[in-house]
Length: 205
Image (cartoon, rainbow, N blue to C red; front, side, top):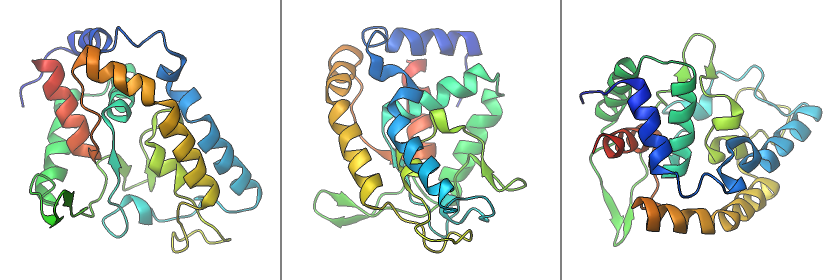
């Protein structure tokens, strides 16, 4: 994929969302507040990801899918940190190719198989996510240890996490409607690298 200058992409992202930027739900951190509070509470109980080898970020357990709005958050962060977008695109495309994320398998009518993959944003050296919590996918924040286990073997989205995700989904109904109506963005979920690449293709057009 050819890439346009960072500032031009940033301008297009702002243009793409100009009709909804005034909504408080557009602030990435505020949308994730409830999920981060749950993470903090679990950390107080010594249920955290401190020494985890990254089980839920690798193909061992990861099949995370995100919305276009979550992809927007990720790209906004990458632009704010002056990431090398050409390298990012190459890394995203490599992930898609390696795990065949562009090849869909139908499980049943209207439902596709969710494929496991190692996330492009997982740092193999620090064993941590390159995206800070304020911009991280909702599902990643909701997936936490339920016991004093730092190997990622007991992690799941528990009742409190599911409730927070459900409340978040309801609060975003308006913003998703406006994105669909004003920006022609369809609220569909895809694997993280696919969603970010699709967004980059959208802003190039």
